[in-house]
Length: 180
View 1 (cartoon, one colour):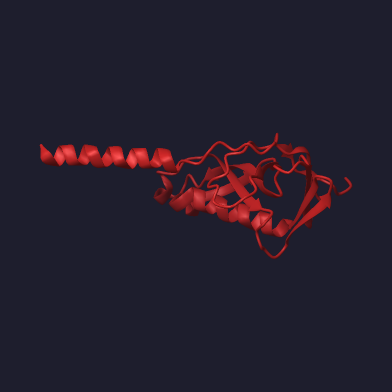
View 2: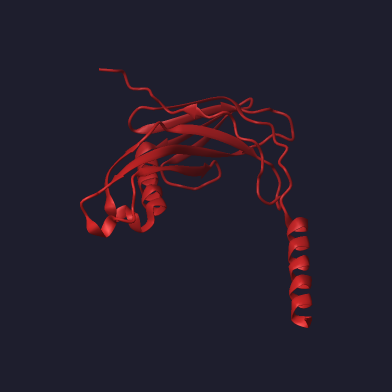
């Protein structure tokens, strides 16, 4: 009986501690006028944000797509793995120091992120492999769908915890190369 009371008391302390430590709902305005395109080598995302003192100066730029995959039905080791879809997200922060990623403040609330397309492609492939787990070895073929981009502002200041600000409406990553 004493053990049960102790467990319940510890659980209450843990839950109340989580409530106190829980991050607040973000209040940074949503970025707008988002566009994203690539030329086969570089991806360029641009957006606007408010210009008042409480606006974001750092941002989270998320690329996401859905992979449709097909399993090797003839491999007996793959019977537990089935065809399907999995959504994969990549998150690049404008404060990240990553070779091939350049963040530019264009002034007056206009921002741009450029990233090497090969980095994003490799990160998508790695994230897909991780999402598939042990079934990745059984994947016979896969296609990734349309890539979308969404952006959220990060609340300026330190020690604010997780950023629960709203994302912009997603936009399709457009191919900027001329059609043949």
